[in-house]
Image 1 (cartoon, chains in turn purple, orange, red, green):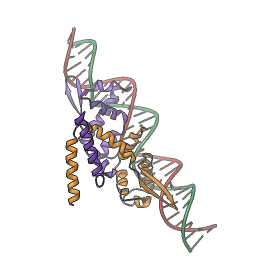
Image 2 (cartoon, protein in one colour):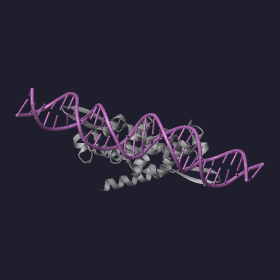
Image 3 (cartoon, chains in turn green, purple, blue, cyan):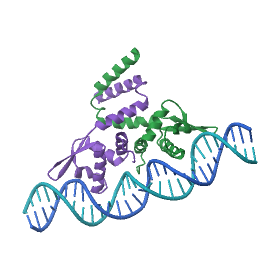
Image 4 (cartoon, protein in one colour):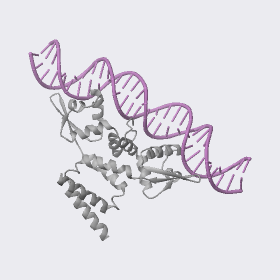
Length: 113
Length: 113
DNA sequence: CAGCCACGTAAGCAACTCCTTAATTAATAA
DNA sequence: TTATTAATTAAGGAGTTGCTTACGTGGCTG
């Protein structure tokens, strides 16, 4: 990774499919490390190391209760990432109207269903 | 990097401040490699290698005319990244109102200034 | 042709990533 | 206490990254 600035650390954390899968799993709610490791054909220490990378990036939080470590998703770092991405997609200075329109559509649909 | 799936390749390409600065520069328009290398205290080959990473990720395109290579920004890969990020920020199923409000703020500011 | 210019490739190196197995810590349960 | 369970730390290795310097390539110019 080499670069130690926050954005680089978060991007690097996301540049691994195992780690992204872990984050996806955590969207369903807090989980223990063992449960998190289950779907992967990988040793527990490997998962622990991935979790450390995610924690350093601020993308998860770990709490201890008894001998279990519970992992929680933290989405704050994704705000910075999203801002950078959207800026470079050219959304910030141009297509407000389009985005606005789409959001309104989605909003209507979700209140309908 | 190890992972070779498209999303991982793009995230990894973005996990370096030099490469992100190159992309930022390219937002102003197409540029030659020499011009692109100028702001960095780094050898030309190093920049060439960064450009290769960006090209492999589909984030730039290089065209040759005479002895110059012109680099162009390609934002398509950012669409996938943005979709993943927004999905995991929970924006797709929840906080439409908040986003809507923020966009309205930004819009007002940009039309004011 | 020779010489310069813009850029890339090749080779090498320190540092890092991602995985492994073995040992360790800490809490629970007999 | 001893054994079991959950997870981390330690140590090591194959492969990758990010830089360097040296050399190569293709296009222009005298």
